[in-house]
Image (cartoon, protein in one colour):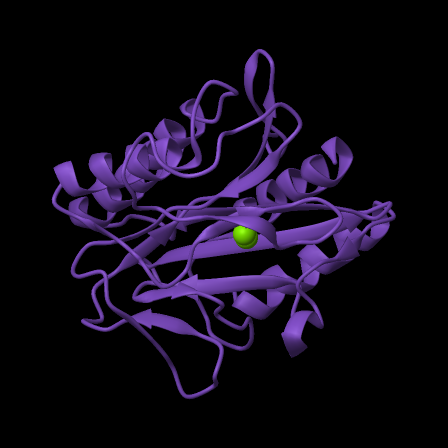
Length: 236
Ligand code: MG
Ligand code: MG
């Protein structure tokens, strides 16, 4: 799983470096697919429930599951890049949200809050904690900052399958949920909206967008729970 996680991290780093005004989401996707295959791994999303691409690319008000294609990124956009890979039968899954050139202060704050919410969730991923301690840490920080967490999509256990039990919501009451134990691996993935938490699926039946069309950010890491605390498997 460490190698699967590293491949995902490297792919995200590579695509992040390509992000600029004028690049298409399809170009990011092709680079990601090529890189993953070159590492002897398999893109995990391609073909998953019929998803047609290696990356999910979700721009501005799109939350998750955006399909890469001919859309050109514009100065001031934010783009969530979500990537999964399977190496020797084990999965890695991570996401980043990157600015395209200069972005406004509100969007920068959205990215900062979402990234920090992920860090706070990860800090709770320890053997002495319960699952919703992770959820609560994310929710409290996001709401303290006047933003909202998406309810309809959640993080997940991960291993031989991309999505395993337990579900890892970004909201919940501390001290509740299953105990976290050494050897568990979970994907923690706050989806944070500048406006309300409501989302809807667009006409292509994949892309999820905010109902109020205000911007959304998404950061994700695959995290192993070890005796010494959280180990991020998708860190570069
Ligand atoms: Mg995930
Ligand atoms: Mg993901």
